[in-house]
Figure 1 (cartoon, rainbow, N blue to C red):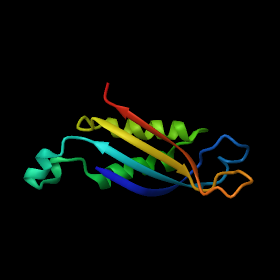
Figure 2 (figure 1 turned 30 degrees about the horizontal axis):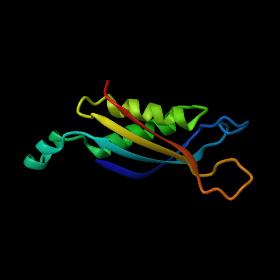
Figure 3 (figure 1 turned 180 degrees about the horizontal axis):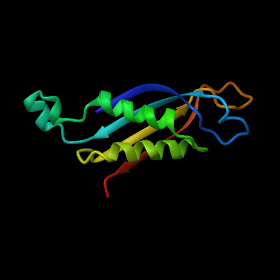
Length: 116
């Protein structure tokens, strides 16, 4: 399962003032789980509902405050892996307006976590 380009405003950052105003973040997920049952049954109950998962991910971005995008990515991975059907997740978090004096489209972190 893939979620690409989820955008939400969050208060994350280590630079002075970054957590004072909401700034845009974008998240991509690759969620690994057994999709055989859903492929056979065509029933939502046999898979992870991507709308519900997207809402949980957006909740991390909008409802928590962290200094590092690495921590935001870790928290999103934890939320995804809380569903026992998820075996592995790759999370990419991008800050769309990084506070640097250069023409930089985004800055972020990509992590992969799996069930212990």
